[in-house]
Amino acid sequence: MLPRDIVRQIRRLHIRARRAVEDLLGGEYHSVFKGAGIAFEEVREYQPGDDVRAIDWNVTARMGHPFIKRFVEERELTVMLLVDASGSQKFGSRRQSKRDVAGELAAILAFSAIANNDKVGLLVFTDQVEKYVPPRKGVRHVLRLIRDVLFFEPHRPGTCIRAPLDYLNRVLRRRTIVFLLSDFLDTDFDKALKRTGRRHDLVLVNIADPREESLPDVGLLSIADAETEDEALLDTSSQEVRDAFAAAARQRRDALKQSARAARLDTIDVSTAGGHLDALVRFFKLRERRLRRI
Image (cartoon, rainbow, N blue to C red; front, side, top):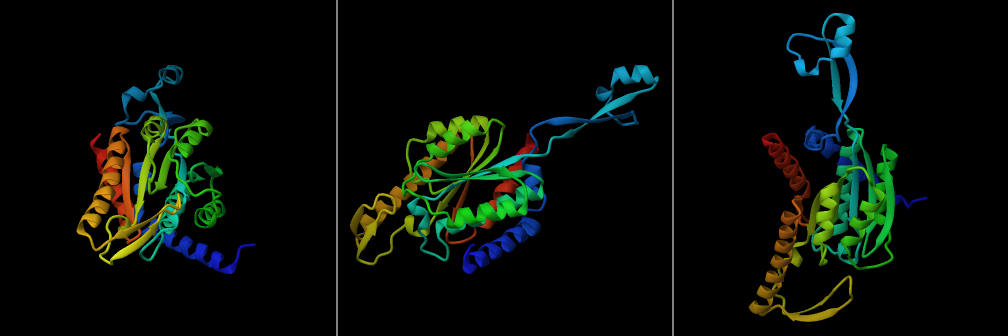
């Protein structure tokens, strides 16, 4: 049985996520993510205004007057949440850690999926696949996913973006909507992004913290890498040191954007400073407008 404080936290996140889905996202999830195809529904009599290309000539010949075939969108989709649980995800200089932000976004996306009768699954990774939960429907299933995102204890601290993508491509044959939630502190995953982007609808959710973007002027500062445990002593009173730190952060961010563009993938930038729900809503609205132009 789960401790009471964990149960309360999951319930609070459940309430916030459902409110976000009902109040903010509305029907945008449905309009942005289309079904995999169309399926035959029925044959009915032709009515003025129907598309003549839909006439079923065999039935029309038998009945002596026009009938048409009706098709509907195959609405049921599969959504996979790939969530980074490496050591760096525990970091957060503001109200939430990066893992907390990932948990809240994962909850909103999962409830959006089941509200549209879609399946949702979870893959938790570090530098290896740590946990895989196959896609299913239902509120109980989503609550289990939220628990795993927030409280699953990984075995390793590192990050390998290729590992979950390669695993996903092996286990899921059908085209899937994939949200990859990570800080992307890794290298050499461009080919994996391209391979997965060709097979699935892959969206990158980049979770950052303001303290990783710039250093405060506080004199000597000891820092440690949460994944490698490497330590360094920085003189933050030096403008040159602070500028170099900020430049390295910009370079990482720009490299990810370039990789996403090369693979023709959408990216959502979120922060532990807040506003991540707004960023998700902007993504849905921008993507909906783009689809209207196609």
